Length: 273
Image (cartoon, rainbow, N blue to C red; front, side, top):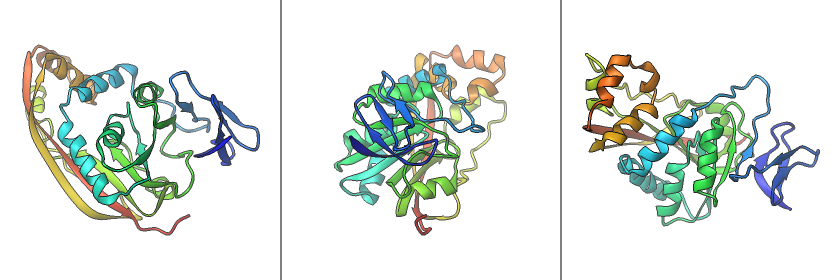
């Protein structure tokens, strides 16, 4: 049996790995799904919802088309700057695993990757696409991973839980947080809204994290018809947009738009728990 960096979501004890399950010394056991991930959401009161299968599939197809490659490449550079060989990288709200998978496959560093998401549909795709990485379902309010078990945490376009992120991350470890830049998808907004608005670029990462660097990357991309459809259904625009505006967008054969991302690098400055 092999000891993992995961902890039991029922009692908090270390989880041990067998071929088709993980289990703890108190007898709690969790089977590995056929796709290769572990379902570790058991605590009552935690949200069990997540991105829909439709949204996850749209994001997988969109990202695999390379439209956000400028971000993926910048994340590799950030990890190589702040990481080292044999680091554990934990992908928070990993979705279908694109960014951490890209980093592992393109970085000069040897990395061990874990990732979790609330959406079972997302984790299924992640585990199938990147079987060398360890994926599981979890809510950010309780991450079933050992205290101080991650050297780097990657967090993109998702809710923040400062205390839990700090617990899982090593003291002096790095949190790489990605948010949209001011004019991200600006030309898409011009189609959807009469008066487009800029993003505020405000992160909700706070104490005990300390900002050490902020990087903005931008690019202009041309989405084909399928790319336009996918970017709509992988974002909140799918349920926030008026029907007539959505119809107008989906009638486009292509769309050239700005994309931009702010990559904030934080150091975990709190003493280990």
